[in-house]
Amino acid sequence: MEEIALVLLVSLIGLVTGFFDSIIGAGGLISVPSLVFLGFPAHIAITTDRFGSIGQALIATLKFWKSKKIVWKYVPVLAVLSLIGSFIGAKILLDISPKILGGVIGVLMIVLLPFIFLKKDLGVVRLKTGWTKKIIGAIIYFAVMIFAGFYGQGTGPMVFYTLTFFFGLTMIESLGTGVVAWLLLCISSVIIFAFNNIIDYKIGLILFVSMSIGSYVGASTAVRKGDLWIKRLFVALVVIMSVKLLFFNNSL
Image (cartoon, rainbow, N blue to C red; front, side, top):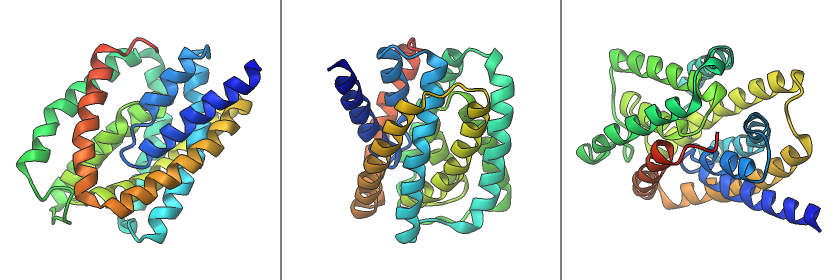
């Protein structure tokens, strides 16, 4: 009976996580603390969640590709930065408190939030940006990926900020383009985690399936609702996520 209850709970966690991950990249703030609450060690929760995220990222990539919401010219650069950043993150951030880094991300999200209001077209229509701005954006994206390589929670909105403000992409284009790089990061991370035997594959497979289903629903909703709807949801969730990272980040 307890086994069935665990499967149902993890499946629910995966569905909700996959849905929000495909809309704003906020799923890690739900899944990792939930797994820790269920009794899994923090490092197992992070690695197992990353295993399940492969399913979420794969389904989202296919959906956004089919809907022509991926700006492929940026994918190679973002993919390389993601892979290198995740490797560095796994090596360096093991010695840095994720609580402190989570708090930094929370502050940055709040500080940058006014830019969403000040620029009404930001994230709603494609904007032209110069190479200087794109280079700065690439550096910031790389820094975010270093953080994502180990911890990951709260990095989705930072990727949103970077791709919309510095690269001029719309909200949906940011989702589609960013998730391709995220898929590669998840795969590379899981390979490293697998070699170190720190993944709970039973729970990971449940998350893989449930996150995939949630991801399909989330990506489909994003495409159907459009950029303005995503932007409004983004603002609301950024506030919630920032509060969580700043004041309720004690589960890890």
